[in-house]
Image (cartoon, rainbow, N blue to C red; front, side):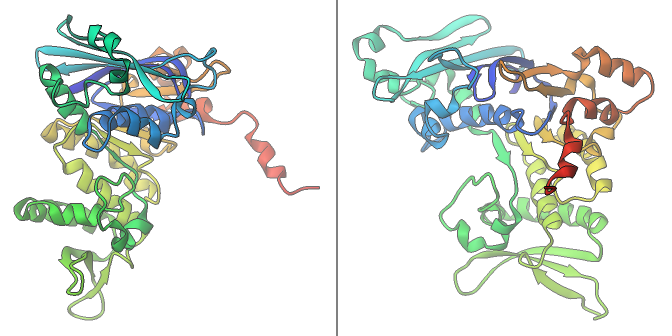
Length: 378
């Protein structure tokens, strides 16, 4: 399954936005334009369908309906998300909208599922009208009623968001009891829980990549300590000592930990992978080859990869298509979303010989950024 289109209404930065979705998506825009919130729409669908999630919990995690609703929304408008999904010869459309009642309780306003144009679900239905409390839950999250479209629910639960925070990996004790931490708090446990054969194969491939990217790193392995069974990464660095010198994840650099987590994630054959600024802490030379690496891995895994980025280095890759880049532009009516291919100026600059990075930077640069140089003057 692949997501092919998304439409947002009153979702955070977006009063109204629609976008076609390719196998790779690069989200580009100024700070606070909504790149993270665009990715969060997909995370929200995952939270709706996941065990321990559902409508109430998904909205609670985001601070309530009022916190989610776009500031540019008119009055108390509903929040809505619609996605079109390609599944071989089949196509699905899932739509959900919600609001809150007088007690600030989130309620489903509409929930619809279509398969190949035929309606599978259309809420509210007569049962909802007879018992409005049913609208506190989506059908997507209820295993007793979602059988006709359960494959959609399974697909949404396969969505993975990753924004590695190195300090969380360096303190693996924090991950005890945690699962699916988007910031990597349970990353070492995730590696440790992977079946042994798969774990060895992935670590071997990652080790080969790290030998190229990280000076003197020769070997990595995963161990558990004797006291609590906590997993730890070990890295052997070439050294004047004949047998090298070993370090744990506590001594790894931020860049090494981020790259290791990124490499592990892209090797997974799960659903769409949402990456938040993967260029952080990485050398520009590494950042420049990330799009090629994504494309090569995708040919094997078939996984969609969505990337938010501020990095010109990441965008210099000539293999990035204009339809793969979504440009986010803040306005007083909410953030507008459009493919770079729809921007005539960008197309003309590329035709004139500029790189994609050079063509895009003027559209993400704050208008009066030079005034920051005056900060601190009296």
